[in-house]
Every structure is written in structure tokens, then in C-alpha cells.
Length: 198
View: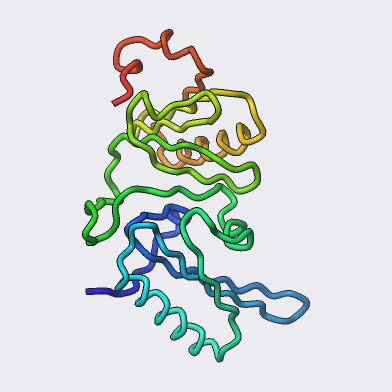
């Protein structure tokens, strides 16, 4: 049962590895429309999903009179043009909608740990929620759900600012969330529930 479903605007930039997406962009430049259609393939999307995304991209191109430029995007190797659409970065989440992978309820707030990479366009890759996922060379966002988001910096670097923007964006999506910034080694200063990773 493969069909195209619109992604709500607050979810733009959230990609599930078991899915494929179509992104349409239309800008007016000097009185002329510049149109682009990208189809994005998650590392866990099925061959059927990949094929449907490609066909639907061609259909959209035809509906627009053949004007759009078509682009194929693959998880982790996206073009700069594609990444530029998502000013607050993109997040790669585990699972997919009704796929052979674990089904994901997009409204649930189970704890997630993201490793943040990228200076201009941050890429947040979901990693296992365990201490062994941390390292001294990266910045991590520990999303504990509706009330607690932690930015854990394991080095000072150029992508710290972008990681902070992503963490603030997550916090702003949830009016009750608190943002806690930790430097490497400060984990031991946490108390009670704050100290738990999983």
C-alpha cells in the first residue's frame, strides 16, 4: 500500500531511514520560476519504496510541464542544494512508516540520542541510547522526550553552534521542554533521573 502522504511542516527535516521522500521546491528568480524535485532514499527503504518515489517524482515533473530539475538524494550523501532547504538541519531517525522495519509513531516521544555532524547544514544521526555511543570528538543531542533535551558537547568545535540551533529548535517545538547543556565530564554532576542515559 504505497502512497504519497504530505509531511506536516513541523516535521520537515525529520527523515526516517526506512522511508523515501519527495521534496518539491519552487522559487521565483528574476521573474522566472526555478523548480526542483528531489527524491530522498533512506538507507533502509525498500526497493518498492525507492521505485515508487522515482515514479512519483516523474509524475510531479510531468504535472509541472517538465520544468523542474530532478535530483536523487541518498541518506548521508545529500546535495548542498537539498541540505539548504532545511536551515535547522536534518535528522535521520530509525524505522519507517508501515515498513518492514520497526513502525514509528511520529507523535511518540521515546528518548533518542543524536550525533550531530556538519558546520553549515547539521546532520543529526540517531544512534543507540547507550554510553558507548558517545565519543570525545562530537556533539550529541539527548532528546529525553517532552520535558528534557540535553546538548552534550564532547569537544569545542565549529558545529557546536549548529548543534545548539538544532537543540533549541527541538525545545521550541515543545513548550514545556528544558534545555540542559553539558560539557564532557559534567555527566557526573547530574543527580537522580537526570543522570540516566536510557
